[in-house]
Amino acid sequence: MISRRFFLVLVSTLLLSSCIKSPLIDRTFYNYFPYEVGKTWTYLMNDSDTVQISIVGDTLLGTDTVLIFENYDGTRSYIFSTSSAYYTIEDTAVVGPNGEEVRLEDQIFILQMEKPLVSGSSWDDYYYNFETVGEDTFWIRHSRIGDVTGLTTITTPGGTFENTYHVRLIERKTIGGPNGVGIISSIRNLYFAPDIGPVKELTTINIHDSTEDSVTDTTYTVKLELLR
Image 1 (cartoon, rainbow, N blue to C red):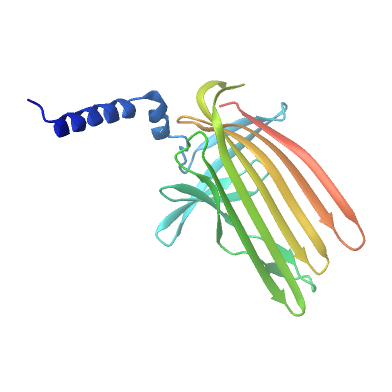
Image 2: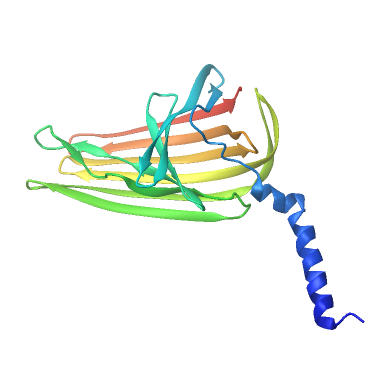
């Protein structure tokens, strides 16, 4: 005769085993971030230009590895991975009153996204810093919030990708000083496919500059779709 306690343990074990084998649960174990040095993604940008994003190297930060991404516009991004999240390393500078470079951030980590990707999950991170040079104070506020809106199928010039996660990142960086305020805000819609990584990105960026003499606003959109 099977005891009640043994029967409940057996049923629980079988249920857990069936969940682990479920395609829905298995998706959290897929590699949506195949990030390694030498990896290159080729995209069609805004339906016209062919551009690339590459991981061109890495460097040690203590005992951990920071990956160096070279972007299509020639800039570089620095991504630091932990067991549960990806962080970017921010490094912002402004021009001081005498033309000197004033660095407001130095090796500051701000959360990029949590892993594994799970539909419905969300996260946020905020940072504030300032630097005083002579009688002038420069400051920065940086916020980034993100969420995983769900799974979808994405078609790009490079093919059709199922089980693709849609990640939305909303970011705002404000830099202020004696001569005015600059604000960079963006909404990024990213799509990650298993074992490939980012297959599509649609980003809207607004740049606002305000001084005593003028105010300017610039808004533009960048669309990237995987070619190969």
